[in-house]
Each structure stands twice: as C-alpha cells, then as structure tokens.
Image 1 (cartoon, one colour):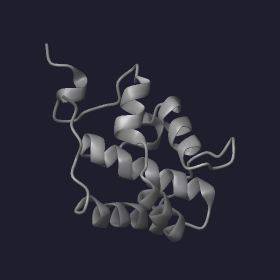
Image 2 (image 1 turned 60 degrees about the horizontal axis):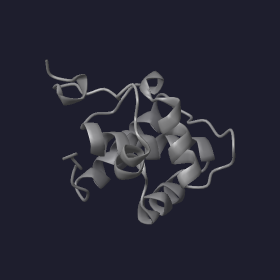
Image 3 (image 1 turned 180 degrees about the horizontal axis):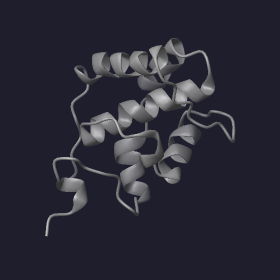
Length: 115
C-alpha cells in the first residue's frame, strides 16, 4: 500500500524525524531574511515560512490546522522567533500575498525529495 506522503495530495507524516525536519523544513538564512523583509509581524513571518517550506516539500499549501506542532515549533526556533510565536494565518489580502510571495520563490527553489 502506498504511504499517504507519496500520494497526489501528500500530508504530513504522523512522526517526523529530526533528520527530516532539518532536511525539509529548515529555512535557509536567505529564506529567513526574505520572509522578515516581507512580513511585519513574527506570526505572519512564521506562517509565510511554513507555507514556503511545505510547498517545497509537498507541492501544495496545507490548511492552517494541518501543520504539526513539531514543524511549527522547529521552524520558529530555527529562525529565532520569540517563544510562543504562533503562525498568523490571515484571510483576504494577507493570505493572497503569502501565496503570491511563495509562488515567486518556488520558481527559484527546486522541490526536495527524499531518497
């Protein structure tokens, strides 16, 4: 049986190893600076980075409630945002802006695959 991560609509694994977190979800210094330059609030910056890294890994934008807490916490700690910062997922213009910004970046970054 094919694992859910390898289907047309991949999802987050139930258990993500430390290696996978570092390999697939660690923002580069350039990505962290890029997000900080485009978002005014820490929560928006975190949401943008989560969208970017998830799109690079899964090829889609997950719904806000799909992000595992361990991924959110890992990305937050990696870019040194304050403890307790939560991703702020907005509707309307901010949400559209996040997708647009991430779309511009994805053409520069190849999708990483495991294996």
